[in-house]
Length: 145
Image (cartoon, rainbow, N blue to C red; front, side, top):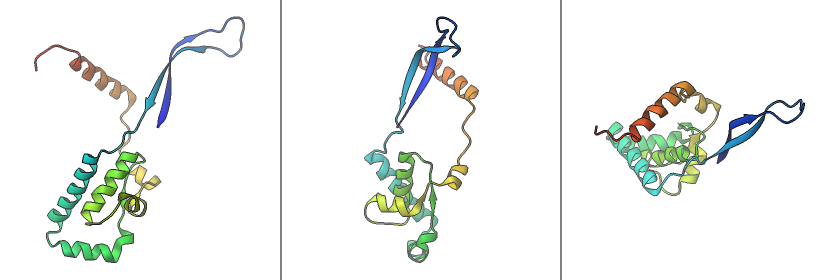
């Protein structure tokens, strides 16, 4: 869903070009956010159902509440498609809703700026790179653990 261009090598243009350095080699990274599988949808729905049963053993009370205050009930999600579908599937199970996930997603899952502010800040690049290096060395090592 998005393409990232990473310059790998720079070169100086020939002559006295005022533009400065130019990219000589670039890495193209195509990022696909992924799609939720059928198993993922089922698992999220089952989790919502189990959450309802654990939190509200008298499920009729929750379902009556849902009927009365449906428009006040909100689920917050990131902008990622698979996260939004997971939120809708969990809500479907939690509220024992019937039908397709699309109407649930549209009416009950919020993806606004407030929802984004609830998410954790991204891990700083230096820490991410250290973790990636450590994982890579572990994956490419022939040591029994």
